[in-house]
Image (cartoon, one colour):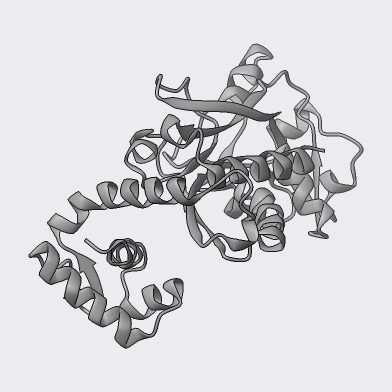
Length: 298
């Protein structure tokens, strides 16, 4: 089968649209539509079918997605030589990233990539789970976040360590204060971020040792929403320190305080499957992520 047809297959499943796939591949819409017709004939399957105003993949296409991605990665590795210039690459990478890190790393990373490899596209994927399987089947190229020790076939490198801080409105009493106290933690309501809707965490365990408890008035699905709610006066939102520093440095009317508690540090890790160890563009991307992370951690 023509390798270019597999690129069309991959783009169609990524975008769910003939026109969007055409834009990604720098083809005309009619040319992409004709390629879909050839794909259907070659694979003896409709590949994409109409669902409302869009297209959805068939079960066969879903099952074949990982195999096609692996073939494209293998072809890219065969073409890529160590002295290849990133400026010549045409490739899309998928990165799963923790929502607390996405605002911090995405701007720094995309800026570096645009400067060195204008033909490279990065697709950021929300971290709905920490399952390593998408790294194995090629759905993801990289995973950035906090996770359990990886399986043997998944590589992991620590980017930096971080911990949770208290994010408050800059013009509030807490924002004007020099520090936050245990009495403040009990007096003011808290906003927590949890995909699973959890209301308890290490802060509650530490407060319990002092015979204290806090009042959580809202649990939101991600840190971005928690940061927006921190703009309201007289509330305390929880956020990773690197995100809090990022938001305040960019002029948001917020301020952050260290908690007067001993809270655990967590390692933010970069993960990839071992099949990408020697892939030149993948190695280059990992270097860019490490550089962007070092810049953010400073």
